[in-house]
Image 1 (cartoon, rainbow, N blue to C red):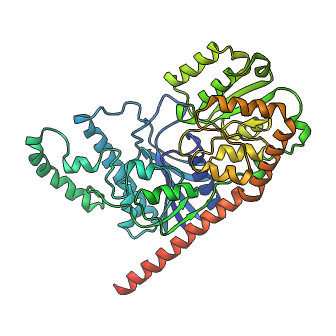
Image 2: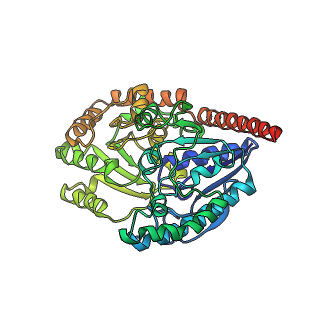
Image 3: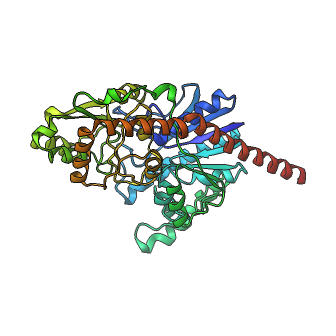
Length: 446
């Protein structure tokens, strides 16, 4: 099987579990003997060259083409108006190169991952070549940036060709002047008009996201729920109840630093505790993406100082994913305070596998993991409720150990990476085989 995987970010340049899961699948397919190609953006996390370098390389045995423009992470995004012409020029270059890869690599199946920030016109290009599609959905990019009928149009593309911009009096003239270019793009099988989500199988990360897409009007009739998973050989830390009994309650925040992830909730919860209660807590903060010193991050540091928490909070910095097992193993609990619609958070599964208790908000698809593991829940953006929960866990270390070890067994039983990889490979292989049958019938008819 030849599989083309398309994603907005790909390791080592990534922000979260969505990109990591894509990489895990790509590497598994290579190990299984399949031919794989990844197409992603040219964004480079942790450097000053965001969006500057187009390159082909190999990462962990997987060929990766990094050339797509990521409009949300571009260092100098356009301000609208005539500046949108630069966006369209780049999209034409991206779409032309993507079409060349489809023709040269000639995949049996295209697997679409996170397309947030990328031109969505690429979605139709595989179907126009009779290549089957498989969508792996971990969040809401398809709803928020495309829509059931392709009418959301982010980044700016279809509206450009409809000329829904500029002075109204000159729009008809501009439309006529663009037609020759549209014809040339059509010859390259590059769409310029809005279209519905092309048919394909959909692998949702959780039942929550399947229901949300169905309510948004998307066809989920050919869909599956494939939960993410972790590698026990990497993250498993053997613990006993005695490991949770001594010392301060060691808490961890791990993930991207923005308001939707809820780090401020944890800081405020610590601030609501008495000095004696706070003395028995310590929070470590590890982030996975680049930290931009925006108002939120600056506000976190300011609140830590205002609440006299400096001695109770340690910033571990940007921790590479390969170093996270040791970080988890050194903590008693991961506090997952997310307020956004999560898919199936990899950080929760990894921490549970390492023996961390995971008090969480149950936000989005994370409730499906929380219910299976019986983890303690607290309301979103509710520091007081979280403070009471953390105090209770610190005071009852036996209960803390029971929660942690129960969560670990749940992950080992139901959320292993091997199960996830094999299930995803099976869907891709089945769709590729169906596409081959369809192609042979077309050839026979011709």
